[in-house]
Length: 361
Image 1 (cartoon, helix red, strand yellow):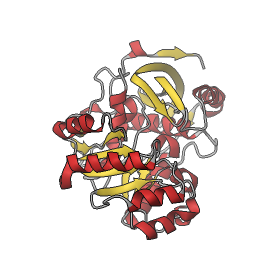
Image 2 (image 1 turned 180 degrees about the vertical axis):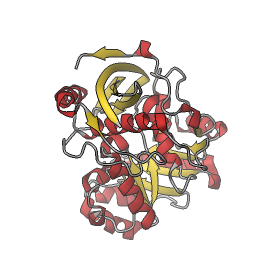
Image 3 (image 1 turned 120 degrees about the vertical axis):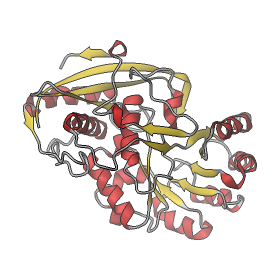
């Protein structure tokens, strides 16, 4: 595969309502689409969209890195497996030390470019990907929101905790459990906001029977194992994975219940597959999770999720519902608690170029 040109398009999509995220209030989602063109006249698209409060890099620094990379990278030749592109793709950008969001956006574009010549596997067919809904621990809205989600077909709900008092979070969780009953799987996400003592107080006051796991409950990573032993609460790792992606054997928790894989935070597609392989070996669930990107990334994530050996694990793709628009001609949607991995969408979904502004590289 010979890559001969790189183009970049910027977008801005409004949120349906302001997003309050790790101390930041965001009214719009900004990002860019990177297009890789080959010598056969084909184009593959990837998305680069660092999120303030989540990524260390800014969108401006990503665009600057692309400008620096273009004259060094082109022309570029790399090999690939035409049967399962991405699974065994060579580390074609290994020597450039890119920001994670840039690395993943370029890898996504490369896979899309490869899939112009894709030879489908016999089992490569349309699949329904379960999605977990996202709710806040807010007593004023939890009942209405949860009832709507259950009626819409969601079987898994993730509730953000740690933003209010422990007492309010406990009250919200108990109401959620009452509404969902035994048939609703509940995930919790504390984003490391609790101290060990607060997390312990929370866990000792709830019924963990319907709790699938809690993501990153405490900011003291050295106490994760101690917390798990004291509470028997299943724990999922999210932010921690980016720190240990090249050395998962050194993770601060011996037996996590799940790995939450945010591709744009981990970066290299090869690292994502390595973590998936590690998780499979040790019986750890893997959950593909978005970061409020556009439908372009969400469509790609359904492909990644379709490769999971446990398709009942609901993916974290509900963030698309927070956006008021999309850059795809046919907007990405979640219906009845499921997203569709549609083989007809490949090599990539069609972009709405009216939503994009090309930048000079």
